[in-house]
Image: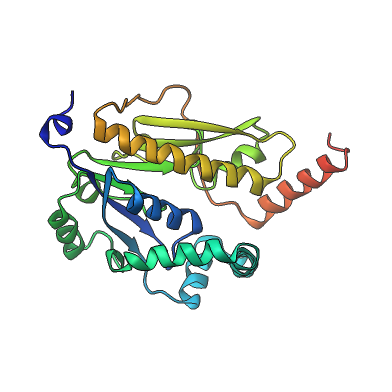
Length: 269
C-alpha cells in the first residue's frame, strides 16, 4: 500500500506541462478530462511559449519544420475550420469547458524560470503530467511528490524522439505504439507505466495518429488513477535501444507519401 493511499481519501493533485503558443485538440481534451474527473484535482497547466497569436504559431512551426511550416500552417487552419463545420456543438462545448478553468492555464516564456518553479512548488502537486512540453529539467519534473509522467507516441526503447508514429510507418512497422512513462533525466528512457499499439497495415497516417492519440488519452488517465490508488507498476525499458528520431524533412515526407500512394494503387514493391 502506498503512502498516498494511507494519507487521506482525496483527489490526486496534478499539474500539466506543455509548450507552444496554442493547445492542440488532444491536449485540450486531456485538460478537460482532468478537470472533470472526480478523483483528480487539476491545479494548473504551464506551457512554454513566447506569445499567443497566429504569428507565434507560424514562428513556432518555422523553428521546428523550416519550409514545411507554410503547408503545415495552412493545414492546421483548414483543420480548425473543418472541425468546427463538421462538429460545431462539440467544438463549442469544448471551448466553454476550457473557459471555465482558463485562469489556471499559464503561458510562460521560460518554463524553468525561477518564478515558474516557485508557482509550481506553491501548488504542492502530487503528480506532474507532460503533454507536448519541451525537455524538462529535474528541478521542475521532480517537484511533484510522485514525480512526473509523460506521454510518448511511440514504442520505447525502439522509437524515441520526435514524430515516431511517422517513422514507424516510414520504416514499415506493422504496428505503432504509445507509451506512458515516468520521466527521468534521459530522453524517452523512463520506466514504463502503460503501453498501447495501433495497426498500421493498409491504413492512412492520420487514421493511425488519431487512434494513438485517443488510446493514449485513455491510458494516461488510467495511469494517473493507478498512481493515486498505489497500483501503478513501473517497468524498466527492455530491448534494443533505437536511435533518437528527429522531425521529418520535406524529402522524408515526399518519400513516405509516394510509398503510400503506390501501395494504394497496388504497385508497391
